Image (cartoon, rainbow, N blue to C red; front, side, top):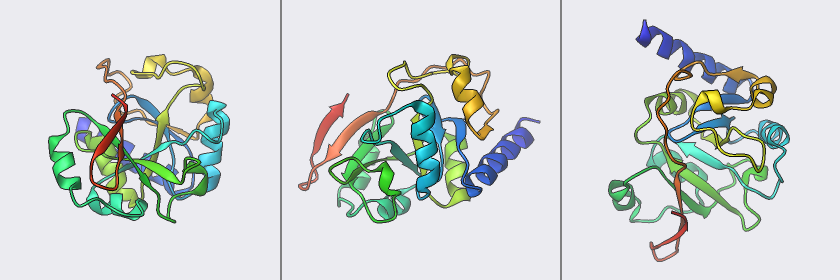
Length: 193
């Protein structure tokens, strides 16, 4: 039953993404809003739903180093070592490639990318979609990030195209990702610890 339910939810999420819709889904950290990272109209819908200023960039979840390279203008040589040393989910701020929806970029042309390493649901969705998945906390701008489904504002639930049912009853709490800027020399600048 659980395996069938899991597969059905992955397929339903991917179907919604392929139709350029917005999801409410459990990420590898908190509950998030997501869409295909290459569809500007869906990104815009997320910003409107959150009441979020356009200059506040969202991040993109990717499945692996190859997908990371799709959205980064350049990939540091030491990325495998950085990933191996991660203690928790980490978002890397890098110069963006032309494949990222323009309204996802920070004013300086960067994008935050996070390779999902621990979350099977996000991994499966990413692999089936074949594109990056926007990930921004499922809250109205300025409100706390929902760690569990029960904390998601009903206005957010009503505003999305598809609500993923997987892990809605899970009460495990995770903290938001660590955010670091990848420097040209391969070093890191911590933006959120």
